[in-house]
Length: 469
Image 1: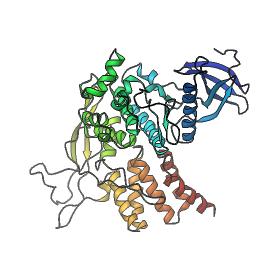
Image 2 (image 1 turned 180 degrees about the vertical axis):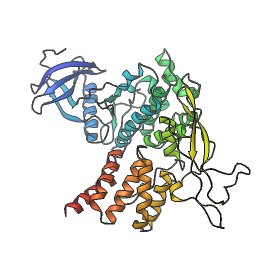
Image 3 (image 1 turned 90 degrees about the vertical axis):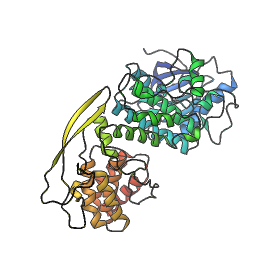
Image 4 (image 1 turned 135 degrees about the vertical axis):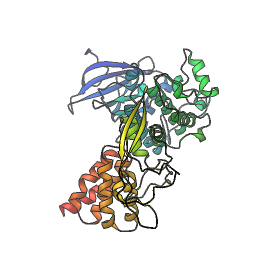
């Protein structure tokens, strides 16, 4: 309901209170100067006389403003003071929060992983800027009208270059999501934010926090002393492969946790992939460092050879065809003329059920006397991308082109990161071959899938300039 108040500057009309936070109230209002809906957070008059709290409120605005423009971070438009009350004006997101979604219990794993990936991008960006959130929880993960997550409320954030807000020994954060070091009053670090995101992930997938308790004190103490309960023991039928991921993500020692939030989410996707019912072990890929601008790229480390495709299978219920071995002795199938396709039955574990799916796998390509080999048509999208990437590294862009075209076709719909890498590599290759106009849609797709990376943006600018020239 719209209320009459002079608590906001005249520029912000028709305010409607939509939330009450720990330090103030949040209003939805219309910015008449720009004709858009905004959210305005105003410090409560009850706290306005407390210099420490006013400093904390200002700290939130400054920390959030440093991150404005980063993907999946709530944008700050204005910071000021009116009627002796500090306020912050932010973009208005009309989709609610993950806290509201969790009232319905565990979420679909595919959707949950998409949300976690978006939050991870925002938190990793904040950490690169020297900002630690310190209160990551579902209530601070807001949804826009398209269902995308945006990280909000850096109200107790610790930002590099700003004076310390609190002394060591003061606990800031929400008990259910506190990292052990925070619960003990030690300084929060980026690893603390990643711990909290892992708690959110556990809750999204299982419907409960790992140490959920009726007592705030008991829950905070459990983060410090109790072992992580296996998420596979929850009543929603989650695979055992997730237990090791959460064991590391929720480690008591911050140094044992994943090094980035994106790495945590990738590990979750891989765990679902490994639980998709395959019985073969695939060789792990050697991790590659992020390439400098305008360099071709392979893929994220720590994914198995078919990890990206199997993740789609684990989450969406599809099955990627696998290369077969001879059932008699475990060796690779020997050469034979026109080998027939073979049928593989795979059990795909999904939330609360196991589905048996039968798929026809392609036969291996014909080989000579030197042994068996696999033709390009039988390679997965990830393998095709790697093969094309190797040719790019050797400067053979003409040779890379057909491989990358097949990779993009096979990876269509898989999403970040593998689909993004293949599109970037194909676009970059076309750019090197002088097909600037043809390169643009692939680079645009890479940019859409990886908005936090500068390489697709830089290459896209070159392609656009080349085409217009």
